[in-house]
Length: 124
Image (cartoon, rainbow, N blue to C red; front, side, top):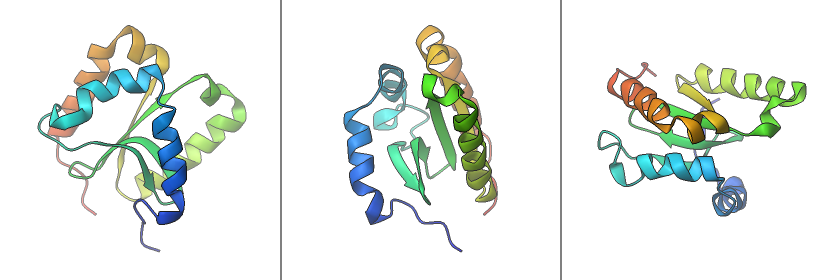
């Protein structure tokens, strides 16, 4: 089954998530928006299949997730693991950061994204 990007049925969910942008997401978005990262176009709250990811760069096939406290329960970890397997099965590269990592060391997060974005994306 082919992967579907930004399916129409996810539109309202994506819109709501963009309105509820967290401070760590907003902070990271500052470095990703307007092609500030290696002149690459990043999208926020982007649907890939049935999942909505925090950030996605189609050119490099990079997904970036910023995980808040709700991601640290056993149930959330299992969901995140299944989601990551799905994304990787479609040759997408996934970077995960915690809210704390973004808030306390944004430079490290930005550096990791920059490094990954300059490496070759996986073949489809």
